[in-house]
Image (cartoon, rainbow, N blue to C red; front, top):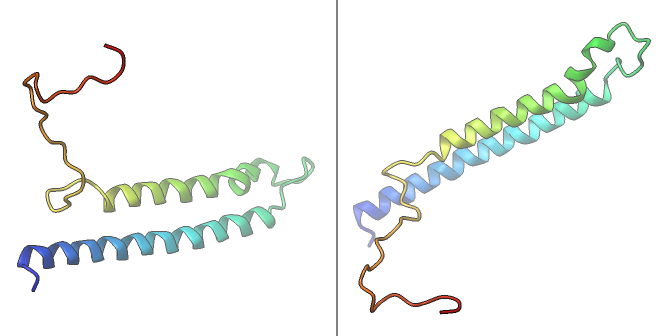
Length: 104
């Protein structure tokens, strides 16, 4: 059977995957909203009275969606003691165990 630690790690990984899936779902909805806003942009013409808002439809919405997704992913995947990913290990300091790479 699994130990208590392994069960906790499995629950943590499942939680992270679930949260990441929610973030990706928001990404799809946000991308579709930005696409629809870009298509419905009535300020494309310089003669349009809404020309000053063109940047909102063309760039701002997609950039805001990206920043929200990036920050969300950073919060979900922030380093913590519970997340055991890659860890550095101290390298041996004696000359016998070190190999020379390249020309000597």
